[in-house]
Image 1 (tube, rainbow over the protein chains, first blue to last red):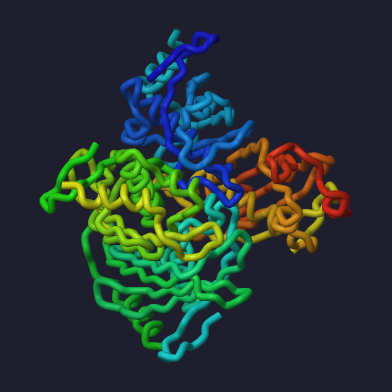
Image 2: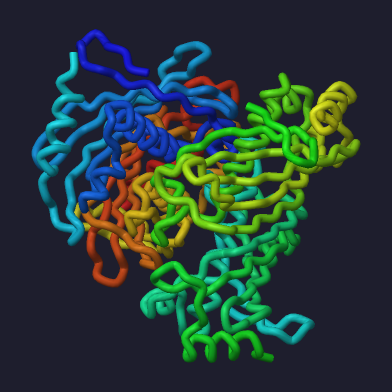
Length: 145
Length: 145
Length: 145
Length: 145
């Protein structure tokens, strides 16, 4: 499902149910696991728009994360249904950036905000550029109103 | 470090400190994570005997787990220092089996027992045989008294 | 969704999409992560029948895994959509057992089979019995034809 | 082991061997797992100075991460021996910040830089202050020359 936020950029939403295996003995989701949820968010955003991360891999490119940041506002608990909101906010020839907001479905409380920046790398492990057709799709997603 | 158990087969011991990220909101180590500890155990056993899992990979073979079993006797907690005891109990031309016992260092309590069985698979993903030199090493480890 | 298998016992199905974070550098899902999928399977089975694992916790009981076993038949890959089939096959006053089959949705290939056995433990960490009402629900699920 | 860097602040080093279970099908360590390594780093730093995170928990306080950031410079691979360098760079009455650098031991290549900021929270989940004795220790660590 995709909705528009106030900045008129498309926000993609995907749901995730917290497993026991995601939590820690503090009784809440372990902080590293939100980065897994970010991955689920960006993957499903791309799938929603008819492409996929796998499609890029099949062309010989990967998109490693070169930077990420998380701000933890409130805790998620075991069995919570989370909503991962993902937005593709920037597309360059050699990189892109996704922003994320993770909310609890039941009370719509904002739990985590963050972003990831990705570089394009080819099969030999060298910094590279997006293939043209893939870049076109990303720009369409990013500019969608 | 390596010690001999009553069955006169060499037992390799490796230590592991439990992270917050290994526990769950039940206050104990999540059950799946003991399989990670098993991996650490067999990796360090091979390294102790002068070979490695990576060495096998470099020859074009991998050792996927085809079966594993765990019996959970008692819980491990955050910050516990664990001792992973690993024994190579069986070596065949196309497979091998490791047994594991995980204890808490402070009270020597047995927490988990289990095993993993591994098949030899080549680069094309086909069932294969151990390379001769690697098989020789494994047999030496397995037979050590 | 729930279907009946040839043994006339209800089988619950839940879907899971493989993340990058679930795979390892062998190019396939890491063997420990199937135990996470098992957890998702039994949680969703209980939810489907109108109860939950959390409901049991709220009554002061937990259900730690005392034994688990996995047989790995074939590999799951990044971005595969998996089907986790879960069956509650045995309910006793102090324990229960779930069986699992994990298949790839696209080709219906069986990837993993396994089970988990759970004991009932109370707040003080002592072996205990299921509360009567919870036992009744589990027996209904287990006996369903 | 602890060394001094050019800024004359004590840097604590702890070692970690990369497991198969830490890597992903891109052939490198999955980006979320560096946050686990950060946790190992700060835990061992505190232990080195004669205190522990568990000691704080025993006094009824936890230290949830409220913000973290990672910059990924180069990839870690399966079986790499990593060095996690941790520095306590800031201590306030209600929060503290750790900085991290992760290097590969073999070539001393810098792989990841990052930080975590932690708030003090009491048993009721409210923002709180460090207990006096714990604050004293943290200030000693932070100011060490």
